[in-house]
Image (tube, rainbow, N blue to C red; front, side):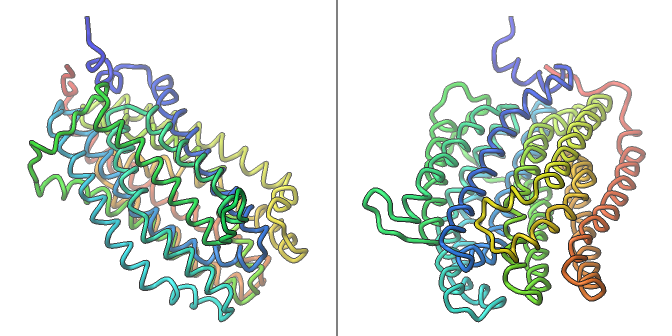
Length: 462
């Protein structure tokens, strides 16, 4: 009779793909949805302070995106390296990857904390000379950057578990962090229960405390639970440069890909600033709202990545391609529903953020226009995940660069000159078309150059 650990290992290579993908994705989707909801609740509370406070948080968002890009990229590198090694039956090496991952998490967080502390005010000042917005944005950024180590350590734990096929505990960890943040938001922002009213800074403090709670839970799971498939033990840890290179080979392009979003938002905000701060605030609101649609796609990607990586390592082409087919179909369905929601209920969505009449008018057009790109983005994200899982993350990075730097910003600037604010949002649709065309070309290329060279018999699984 197989023991539990063998079953956990083999399920990535033997359980029917639709059942396996959705069983692994649902916990991630739930946790990502809760993550999205707490981001929205955070902005809703901040919006009650006033439009200046909402604008300050919106202007700070690109720096938060840099933090997110770093820990997501690191996590993707860890996840991919672990799942590929498990597919090759290298369990001890997979555990060593996880141990390297935690050390990298601390180093990256320290560097970002130092940079955030010294550059926060200068960054906010790029967009406005309003002293109140600058002060609120500075305090928010310093808090979320200096104390970002909680999110990095938590992500290293998530990726370690997800790379070996465990999705439930990462879901629980994210729920703990998100619920803590949601509870603390009004307490810290408005001064409930005897606490001082800290405003925008209170929102940042609630965020980092939530991250600490999630981190504490995940560290207990990783180092104290006897049920983990991978056993980490720093007493026998041995540093390997090749493991670090492997994590960065996948993680760095993924981080750059995510980081390009920060540059895109910064550039977009500079374009929108020419139309007034209300346009900037609306774009910040859009990014929080669209996470409700995109987070399930990212959760689906988290579930798909270890399946892609394991079956790539096992040279099982049929299961790899079936995973992509099922994932793309699910992503396309979710994104189409998202587009319909943004078209039918844009005013109702905007009302949650205490909008001025100007914000409402801009927001309705923004939500309807950008959402037309959602279905294309869903397909693109799933193909990108497959590249990351096989260690070809640079393809996703190039695709993201094409989407956001080569096409989106120049086209948006041109549209702003030709049609004003009403036209700027359509740059998203044009950029997604170019991005998807590139990814499809590269996917066919790797089907010919890698998959067609595999031997008929896949790697034998224990």
